Image (cartoon, rainbow, N blue to C red; front, side, top):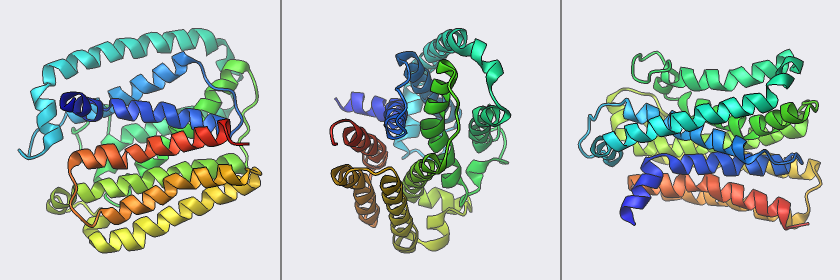
Length: 301
């Protein structure tokens, strides 16, 4: 079981699950029909490939880094997995293009910009298609790094599911202020998780002179002056979104649970935690958020 858990989290399959779950949640909250199973397979595979490609390109510099050691020990298997997922991604992309390609010529310039902008930021995060080849990337901008990740994730799970459905069904895509608030909510939530993750890397980031929030402000100030206040802003954004959408009271309450968990977990980080705590508990908040959102939209009227 321990090997399965490590593979689930170190192999980035959990990220793939989270991106699918968050996409379903966002579609339901925007009252848009769900995408096809093929679309969810595409985004799952793309997510696993993206994160694994980044980690497999890194060299082991710290012997105590459990994730780096896991990649070194399973490098052959991971390479085979990358080849398999690349084939799956290519096949799903071709089938999706066959289904939707004829509708692409009807896209507006705004829709084309949305399709290209988020992947561009994802590439710039590592400085190019091959991570580690340059230091001129968003990842080395400590204060900007969590916002870049949050921005890309918010686009992937909030914008793309609805945009893809509109292309497939030949329906207009014209997001309004409620969609903007939902994007902001997801952006803030995931950005907070990224800032929490930087706490794990405090020592190495400090040695690299990478100016993350925790390196600049220290642990206590990061928790009480950054994480908890910004998490509260995210909660307030959701409440505003829910009021504008006339959500029932119980739906609002169930969707506040992830934000309360976010604040609780942020407070818990004043004590040292293991790498699996960050991967399972902190990243697990994404899954908790999506489950609460789906339950709120599906079962609570």
